[in-house]
Amino acid sequence: MARSTWIAVAAVVVAFAVAVGVALVSGILLLGTRDEPHTQPVTDTTRGSGSTAQKRAMDAWRAEFERMHPGLRVSYEANGSGAGIADFITGRSAFAGSDVPMNAQEQALADRRCGGRAVHLPMVIGPVALAYNLPSVPDLKLSPATLTGIFSGRITRWDDARIAADNRGSRLPHTEIRAFHRADDSGTTHNFLSYLRTAGHWPHEPSRRWNGAGEGVTGSSGMTQAVEHSQDSIGYVEYGFASSARLKVAKLRNASGHFAALTPMNASEALQGARGTGRANDLVVHIDYATRKPRAYPLVLVTYEIICSHGTDPPALAFLGYAASDAGQSYLSLYGYAPLPDNLLAQVRTRLGATT
Image (cartoon, helix red, strand yellow):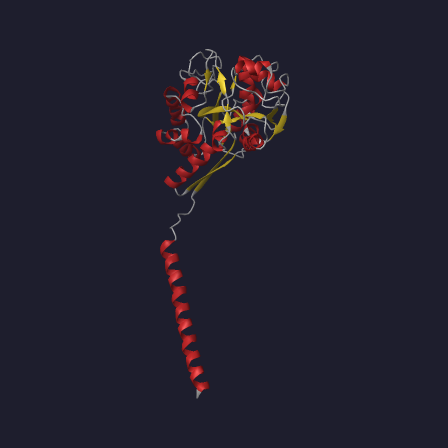
């Protein structure tokens, strides 16, 4: 009797468990069906590559653009300005991001690829930060000549008299300076050396390849990590990377004699009224590193998107059109960039409108 009762109870328990299991599975399937977003099939794609300096801007633009256009996909490989130009020339990408204009040989090859003109469109202003790791000095100030001494290897200790002259009243440690530079083909390097050549009497011609002293690292992320984890160090990196990692950033003396803090507003000030120096319809920008505007932070770079003047694929044009829109430019400061000045932005939009 007892045995049959237990069998009956077990049968009820099993039946209940099966019923609950079926209900749970049904509920999960129902919830999964209800909550799963409808995904629109991808109808077209486009690809860009190049500048690591603009990666954070590209990531933000791509996310918002794809939200607005679910059927379009934009990929961007941040592999450095030189690699991006090479990708564009060989047809691996619809556009290249570069922090420095193409040289004459690259321009000729890009024109041949396009079957016409390849043009530069300024899209991002990226202040270059002098990021440093010196816990005892919260407010480092540097002049261009002092920077040249540090990165050429002539100034080797933090309490050197030339650094002390820029930082009167500060207690500088008697420690060796670890100066980091980019080891890869970098537009940021070219801009940094162009600034030092103009303002600090750098002894060599600017190049995308480093030609000074120090320790080499790869990419903007590599530079950020090197400074972050190396006490007594200094390096040059786009402000967005330095800001995100909460690195200390030096103030830089401009041609007016003021030590300017790095802010998006001060960076934009350096490019107000900037003039173009490229060919007709090409928007290469002249950067005045010796600007005398008191608030201007003079060490800035302009990242260009390089495209064919005719025949660029429609998804790439639509994407770059969004990047140059009021919406696309409006939140750049959140990622450590500065928006393009109005006069330059109007020219970019006109150029994109003429590109078919």
